[in-house]
Length: 165
Image (cartoon, rainbow, N blue to C red):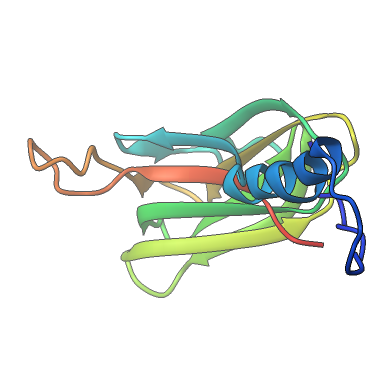
């Protein structure tokens, strides 16, 4: 249910159950339920693709039907290890490359990479995902369970959340 702008009330106005539910209850539920999609990986993903046109899938939000409201797409990668000299992580919507979100050519491994992209998807089904490619060799998008039982790396993830207009 979308946010509904509450009407301005005057002293003596009658507040019915329907008005109360729309102006208060439904809007509080909207504010509480901001996460639309979340998915994580708990093991490294090897990146061998060498083209932005055919990258390796890293993590996908899964198909979600959106309402045309603004969203924030966030990603976190425990580490990015480059191929021969580079690794790139792009944001995709189904089969469309939307943005290059991160790249690493500075050092062999970069830890704790966070990315975000705010957009307004059309009112339709969308599958947002992070995909990666390297210049040559094999790169890695690192992830772990983060539970202290093995690798102490946290999960890498994608999260899609509603944002205020």
